[in-house]
Image (cartoon, rainbow, N blue to C red; front, side, top):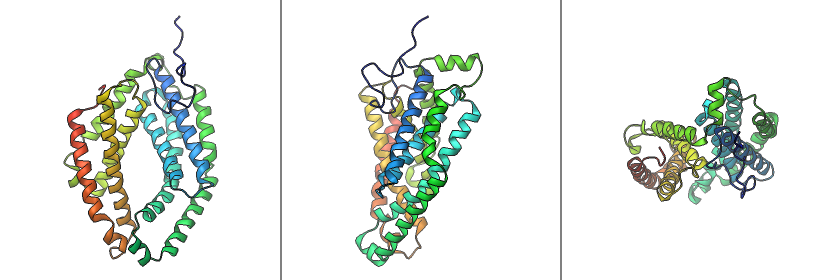
Length: 295
């Protein structure tokens, strides 16, 4: 019987490779690698936000949770439904808790000097501090610090496996097969959004952003499977598209959280929104023309 592929590359210690998988791994090894990396990432940023008010903490913790959910969805054929549903529900709950902190940071980050003065900077800062305190307390109550250890323990065993010979063959198969399928499905969801980005409502643009973000994370997970300049350009364009869509989403959050006469509602969106729309339309047009490498 041939030896099983290594859990990590011989020349790459655990953690140094981030969340990217590599050729030669089985689908099961790849999923374990991604989930372990996401767990470590979340635990690290959760610890940071308990000691610091820096916006990177909650933002990066949310990214780790979204990456985890993307991996579970993309490789769902390997996981039984109860296991996936349990992890997904807890990840979504923590993601939403951290979202309150993130929204407060968005309002602070996009304040202009004049708008901040008009809205009483001290009051806004005090409100943001209160939200951080509330979120920290809610995370403690939710047992957020237990999420990463529980995730590691779950995927260390085999209780998450789907039953049957077909499921076992999928787990033992090279990761390239399930990776290609996940990328194909993610690309199909993105291209299902009809019309230009400029014509989308805030809600439609937000849905498109989430689908594009899933495609980006999957592309990062599987970047070693299809290396090359074309793949690098694809990921670079996805990143700039995400930056532009993120700016548009932040401005939509400002509009939703402020009254029409509020200084931020009047000053924040116009120029930056036009620029972000131009960038996102350009990048999406180029991505659609190029297609997904490896698919």
